[in-house]
Image 1: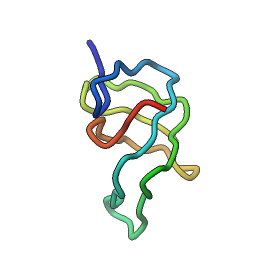
Image 2: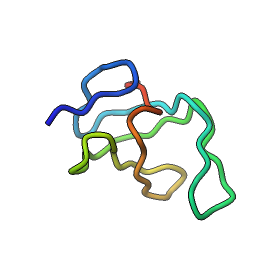
Image 3: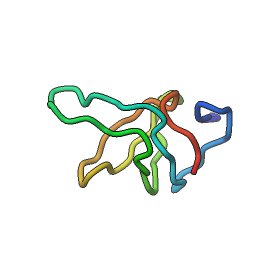
Image 4: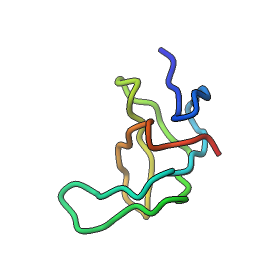
Length: 69
């Protein structure tokens, strides 16, 4: 399974990625701002999603909103 970011770069377990668009968090009033760095991502079973820690909370993020740092 190949997981790619918004630019087509290959993502691997433990990579750091940057958010390229402000994202609203489902079930919350908070927003993940553009430019936020998500460190040490984990790959999921779905190749369109990765898991990472954002502001002390583990979240699943769509790869179309991420770029490899």
